[in-house]
Length: 280
Image 1 (cartoon, rainbow, N blue to C red):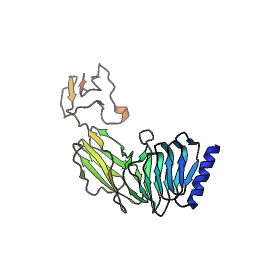
Image 2: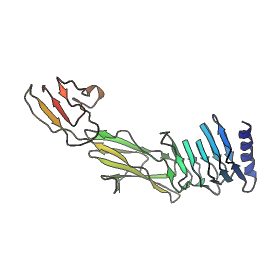
Image 3: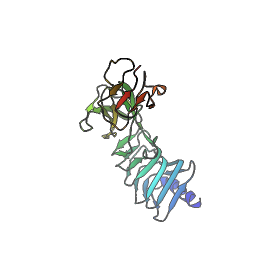
Image 4: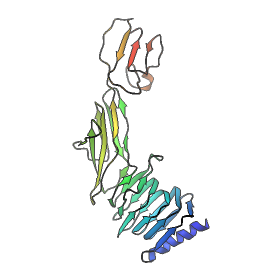
């Protein structure tokens, strides 16, 4: 705890000095528990050790900072709050909750700002500043990813802020993407009638930032062709789509209508062909 207090003091005092330097040594492990706040006034922040501010902890860059070193850094929140100069990330800074760029904060993410969506699905970026470089951990979220009948799925990404601009794109092969006409909001509701990949091209109103979110596949499994059979006859219902999971329903796609295999009534409820033993 004493080490933590000393480092916080150095960071705060540094704001009154010309280009101060704060170093976290190779054998130093700085850990904050709870809503600990480390404020650095700007200059050079070199981390060759370990910096961890989890559980609502916050690292604030109060002035333009060059962050580098060979150490590791994981913080719940990273805040860039300076109106002059540019902060540059030359070493990986992992964020588990939110990275925030306030108005006029100029930040070169340089591929080193990592939203840890791999383990924290809600990690996000809020940008009202001036962003350049690229950001790791972008995601494309969808409310539904598959369906047997034409369905609607609302797409979102984990980047917000009044400096952001959005353009949703679609592709049939995950290679060639085209803009979806009029889809320029933070959310887009897709009407899915065929297997389609969607992503969002992110730009800003005040910089040259330009980055695509990872593509998300919205699958369309299709519906069986209409068949007419006599009562009490055996019938096989098949779909032409191939996949790793199949679910059959009666009357609707609501959970209570999902078929559970009962050999005397239906067989193959988890395959692409369903046998109705005694059609009613």
